Length: 227
Image (cartoon, rainbow, N blue to C red; front, side, top):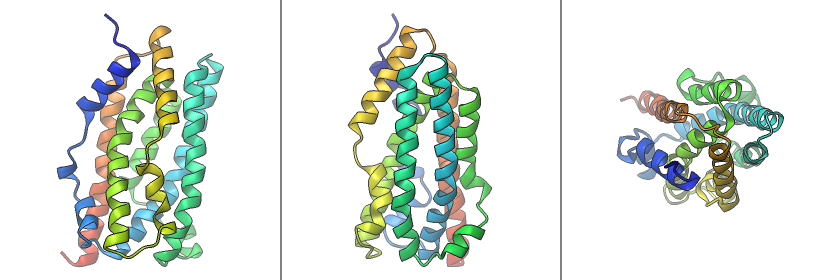
């Protein structure tokens, strides 16, 4: 029996879930021991991730629309629009962390942090849109959980105001409309037989690149702190 979209997405998310205890950086931010420079590097890396992901999501939306998959197109357009909002919310964080416009323009991103958006671009070119919906959605829970912890720590440990935490709050907050669009896209994909077994491989790699992102930042934090 073919599973429903909700069953498939729930099972995939459970299978691919990351263990929060293995994250090498977020616990340091939570207890306030991560260097402030590490927070600035995190923001700078996101400054590069956001426009790359936005273009990837827009391309997926266009591909889905051309292949008569309006449900996936709507989902990815919402993601693309969300990246534009995320970019706006990141500016106050960069400002409060002392990152100048000149540094933002000249900063050289780290390969380990940019592997995720590079793979998102690969998905945009190669994946069946419905499979990409499943793979990316499975990652949102772990990313959102990290953002929630970081936002709270920025307030309690680093003394940052609400505006400076807005980027992380955006991803930590529930997104019921996006969830609805994801379910509709996957259900349509199942109905049209466009969901393939590849979604598990895609999701596994997405999660691996997420882990690489945090590991790269943690390594830099150790260097900054002299460990």
